[in-house]
Amino acid sequence: MTVMAERPTMSGTEYQGFEELLVALDELAVPDGYRAEIMRGSIVVSPWSRGYYTLVMRLVCEQLEPHLPDGHVIDRAPNLFVFPGVERAFGPDVYAAEATALATVSNHLDGEALSFVAELTSFSTRHDDLTDKVETYAKAGVPVYLLLDMQEEQATVLWTPSAKGYESRLTMPFGEKLPIPAPFDCLLDTAGFKAP
Image (cartoon, rainbow, N blue to C red; front, side, top):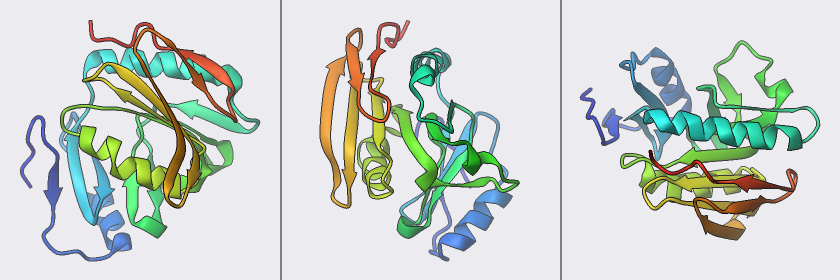
């Protein structure tokens, strides 16, 4: 497998099935500074985020934590959430999920336990964050998807998931206060989200 600095790399040339891909992902030796996810029948390896992305992720967690649904936790730990029905497995930048979904020895967590996901785009992941992940999270019923477009410096919140995608969305430039809908019902202050 070849790993490139700013472009995702797909391993394998022949689709073997979702369960086999999960096993291969578990056995994959991912180089330091990279992460692996399953998208469209392939293992995709992409670089980890820039330094200031960590500060943005912390700001999101700190602001949403007081508004979590009962029994949910929010984190930015590198966990893999699986969506077997659509054969995807993602490691969201920030997520809120039922705490019970984390009480397992497995590293394959139930994507249906998610109540919130935030993805911060990079040059290598932007397309998938704007398309495949939007569709997958909506079909899985994730109530709120926050897309932080780091290249365009704008935040988009999507809610009301359905089989056809998210039915509601709102986009605001960084620096504004973005309403985060139920089950959070709060304002997310995006001041401090811009690149230094």
